[in-house]
Length: 463
Image (cartoon, helix red, strand yellow):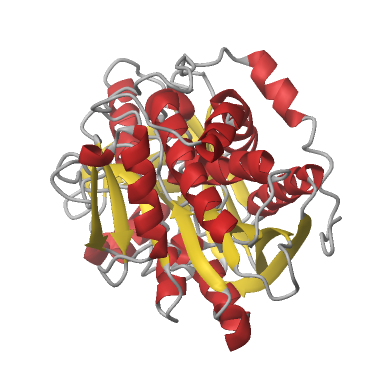
């Protein structure tokens, strides 16, 4: 029932089976509806409507979708082909569940990416090796050469055999232009700039180096974990040849993916469940926000046939990582009579990390005030026995709930994070290590789906 889809999105519908057959599934949650959940203070006290949700949810199904997004597609940079592949896959799933599905396109800025190829297969292959490319460097090329580490870009130690090599250096923004020019003059075929290490638990992300103009060679910016692994490899081998491929992505269109099932009456209230499906450069985005995306998909499947007074909308936002672009575009298109119909928006961003300290389920409100969304999730937490693990509402934007709250719509973001602050995010955040194996807990994903599913259904039934 798709209204607008662009290119065919059926090609990935069979990808789930292929991906899951190739890799073993992590351990799945194994509790019954009335069992006490991990971390809960008591067994749940569910009503008959809650039972319809918790008995229908499958973390295994959600994981299958996550493998397609994070492993089959990988980084999903706003407006690029990879993001469009993900949009088509998600829309195809909502189609299958019976929703009126549409893509909502909008323009976004150019992107510049790089792929690091390991010629001798010496580097670990359990992380992503995408990086950022400098827009002012050589683009749309592939080069290859042995790696030469010259230390800090501010005071490089140049070996005699730089010609034909890929030069590695600790980055300093002020030193970039002069350093890259000297590397090129010495015959280097590419420059890899290494970020400064951040304070734990933060790790630096891949970046597209700025400040260059018409550099004659590719210049790329890697993540902290890639920096560590490159230098560890150089410590044990005398030959580490790499290929560097840079790509300029221009004239980009990103998409929101929206599925709707109309409620009773043409002007019925609206309840929305959402997540963002794009990623930053260099991150497979298993938790940020593949987890919120597959939560949204799985709840769309479960709620597809359940009766509600409200219109149900399930939204997957594009280009969140560049500043909430997709959700802000969507909200800007809503006439006031549409905005007035919204009862609650349940935004889910990073709902499944396996990082041990992330033991608090945060209720995050851009205004800091409680609303229909936060109240419904807290009530669900009480019924599920999780209320002491929930904190909030706490003032915080920086996810797509903000776009709705800025215009007065009841919305909130829900996420597992460290107990001291909602700013305490897991080390794989925005990194090449945001993979299923390194950063996903199916138990936390299951609990998140139960909390949001029971809360959204409660509001939608009574709206």
